[in-house]
Structures are given as C-alpha cells and as structure tokens.
Length: 371
Image 1 (cartoon, rainbow, N blue to C red):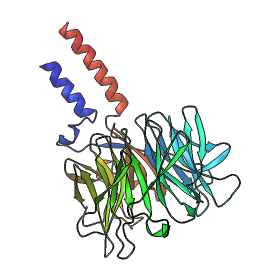
Image 2: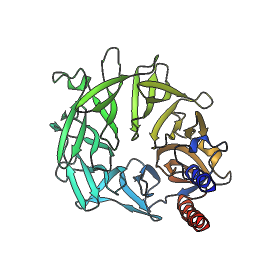
Image 3: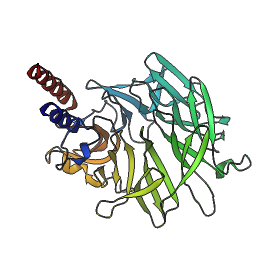
Image 4: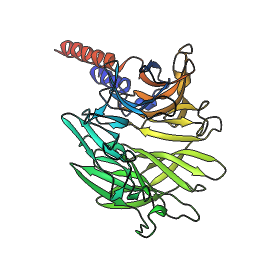
C-alpha cells in the first residue's frame, strides 16, 4: 500500500492526469530567455517535452529572426544558409518548422523543416507566395496554411516527406478563393488536424474544423459567436481556441467529445486558449486586444488562474501571453520584464528534472525496503 500511495503522489507531482485535482495552485520559477544584441523584443511560441523552446526576436518593425533556446542558450536558426523569420513549433524529436524567405523571390516565403538530421524547405500551394507552418507532430508531419493564388486563397495544408496536400475548405470554390479560406493550426500524434474555415462571407461565419481520415468536418462555433479560431489539439483529440463575437467580444473554448464549451474569463476580460497538453491543462491569454495590459492564464480543474499570481511577486515580470505548455507543465510565452517585452519560460516548483531524480530515488528506496 505504501508503494502504491507513493506512486500516486509521484504521478500528481509530475503533472499526470490527476494533477489538476491538487487543492493548492502550482508555483513557478520564471526564466528570461535572453535578448541578442540589436533586438528589443522576443516571443516564445512552442516548447517540447525536452524543454527546447522556439520562437522569434525582432527590432522594431525590422524582419523577425527565428530562434532555438536549449541548455540556457538562445541561438538563431538558419536553413540552407538563410535566416529564418520565425520558428513556429518543435516536436519531441527536436525537429522544428517555421518560415524562411525564398532565396530568389524577396516577397515569397517558404516553409522549412529542420532538426534530427533533416534540413529542407517547401513552397506554397499552387502559385501562392506565402506559406505559414503552424505545428509539427512527432512523426514529422507539418500543418499550417498557404496562399494558393499569388497572395490570396488561403488553404490549410498537410506536409509530409516532401509532399504537400491542400486540405481544402468546406464550401470550397476555385472561382472565389479569397472567400473560402481555411487555416490549420494543430496536429496530434494520431494525425488529427484542427483549424478553422470561412463558411460564408456575408454574413461572415468561420467555424472550427477537425480533419481526419481524409475528410474535413465542421465542428461548429459557440452559440452567440460568429468565428471559432482554433489553436491546438492534444493526443486525446481535445481542441482549444477562441470564439469571436460582435462588439469586440471573445472567449476561450474547449471542444471535447463533440461538445464545445466556454472556459469563461478573468475579471470580464476577453480570453483565448492557445495550447493544451496531454494532461488537459490549458494556457492562453486574458485581455485579447490589450497588448500591454493582458495577462497569461492557466486553466485546470475548471478554474482559470492569472499566471502572474503564481510567480514571485518581486520577479520584475508581468506575464502577458502564454503560448504553449508541455507535458511536464513547463509554459512559454512572452511578457514585460522590467518594462521590456521578452520571452519567458515558466517551470513548476520543484523543477521537473528534480522531480524525476526524486522519483527515481524514492522508487529505489521502496524496492530495497520491500526486498
């Protein structure tokens, strides 16, 4: 019984499925990812289960530069000798995807895949000039959106091993490509893809979709809203995003088992959910459209919590935007650090590495005791 109880305790500590039932909130250490010389802001977009972080830095209105942060060091990511403009996602094998400029056409962007011995680029769909990768799963499948005709006609795509597939859009029409756009944001381990599409231009309506087994399914919009911007899907198929309504309103939502539900708000602020891990913990932003006064949130056990209340009060940070969370509970995004916009990494206390060491030690002691 003692052995079983300790195992249950370790599962809770390590952020397992029952972690959200803890009565006390999780506390976090907050880390500044650094700022290369010549830049004035940084944004972290994704983190994998190895703690590798990707994103971009920029200086004013100058072009973005994609980065990888690992082992306490931030370095620029280049592909085929070219500077990347953004690293959007990284999988658990350390393979990244994002945007890079075409070497021959200045106004054209390409997608890229780099890491674990791979380094390649891919062009937009059709005669399009822009491709925007958004996510990559552990099998190396990339999803995102691309223009299909010059700079218009956005379509969700799936890229795998050099082959790019147009996922289309419900109510698709080649005659009016700009009116039936579709956008893919997330892919999970089983290859389910989620995003949104423009169902009608007048009145504007943009529902969420789930794409699986070669078919796109309309999964709807929260009642009273006209758009469902979808941002992530976990391995259980739970989808999160933001419902947008008239009068500058929005609310974070979760779609699970065929039902879309609102996650509520913080102090009446507009909310958007940007990521969900495989334990069902959600992160996002409250105060959509309020760039310098928004707050990053975590949603667990049916409760939305301002992450600024879970870090040391004297840290110098105001966390604005939580963009991703891994299965160890580490969170990345950006905020104001002593007034400057910078990328952050939040790590639960105690640190995941310490928990793993502690768990190994406790299990060894228990085995010896049982022997």
